Image (cartoon, rainbow, N blue to C red):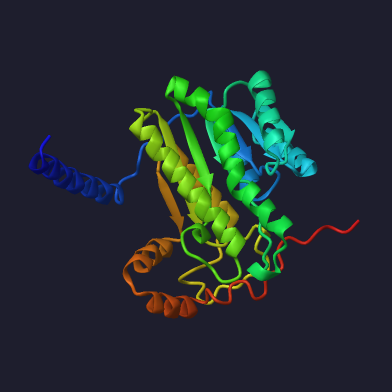
Length: 306
C-alpha cells in the first residue's frame, strides 16, 4: 500500500478504536468463560495471589499455586477448597531460582497439564535507598520481580502458542510507570516487567497469535503488608488500595480481556502528565503528590516471632 492509503487506514482505525474505547466506558462488557482452564498464580501464599485464587475457586478451573512460603500455600489451598475448588495443586517454588522454576514447571505439566492462564504475581520489595541496598538484595528483587516472568513465559508460552489459546497476566505496579524516590531497585524491576509484558504482547500480535490475551496490572500501594508503613499525602487522590478491591478489578480485567489496568484512575492522568510536562515541572508535581516521602516510614512485612 502507498503512503496515502496507509495513512488513511491509520486515521480511520484510530477514530474507530477511540470511539470503541469511549463506548466501553458506559457498557458492561461480556465476561469470558474460563471453565476448564489451568490457572497458575505465583506468589499465591498470601496477599493478592491468595485473593485471586479465591476469586477463581468457583469458576471450575484447575488452580496451580506457587510460593516460597509453604505454610501460606497450604492456607490458600484450604481457603479455595472451602470456596468450592476441586482441583487445587500447590508447589513450594522459589521464583528467584531459574532452575527451580523450570523444574517445577515440568512437574506441573506432567501432573496437571499445560497452563492456559499464567498470572505472574510474586514480588518483593527491599524498601531501601539505592546506595543502602546490598547487591544481593538488588539481584533478588530483579530475579523475583522481573526474571521470573521470563522463565515462566519460557516454560508455559510454547503450549499456548501451539494452540493459539491462553492468557498472560503481569502484576506490576504504578512504580513500573513512574520512578519513586527510595524505590530504585523495585521501580527498575517493575519497569522491566511492564516492558517485557508489552513486548511479548506485540510479538504475539505480530506472529498472528491473537488467541493469547495479555493483561498488565499497575496498581498504587496495596494494603497487603508489603508496603506497611508507607504514607500517601492525598488519600482521596491516591488512596492506599484495599486488596479485595484490587483482586476483583484484576479478575474483571482478565475475564474481559482488558490489556491495561491502572489503579486508581488517577494513575492514568499522571502517566499523561509525565509525558507532557517538562522535567522540572514533573519534579514539582512529584513533591506535591508526596512521591518524595512515600517510603520515609516504610516498615514492610514484619517477620513473625517464634
